[in-house]
Length: 131
Image (tube, rainbow, N blue to C red; front, side, top):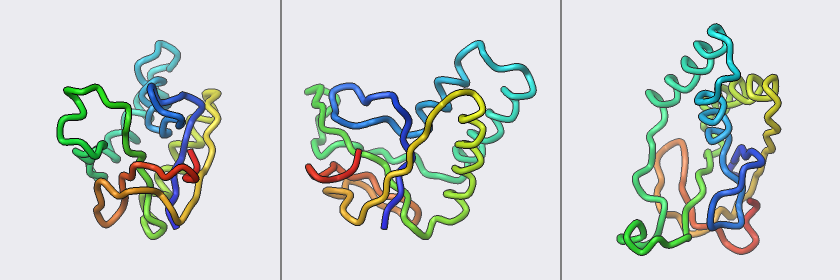
């Protein structure tokens, strides 16, 4: 089982919604946050930067950036990434306070795996993969 948290923002060039980090960074760079909230959000994002690898591969092609291909992988947590999923829920609750709706997607069929580590996968989704 794989878990993905998504916001309403579409991914450009894909029939998929962006992950919840998209909403978090959108809020971070907005002028809506008071100082205490901005500090809390930055602490949450900092934890993820320190504890979750940012995959280097989001496309099947080695030259996707040159060809401007729209095929991009989606990031999914593995079901046993308990600490990271728990921290994600904390961030999601914060985002909800600021008006962001976050949905939870689950599946056993994420697509063609482009990247994998002990916590997550990035996959080019199959046609029936939730997005």
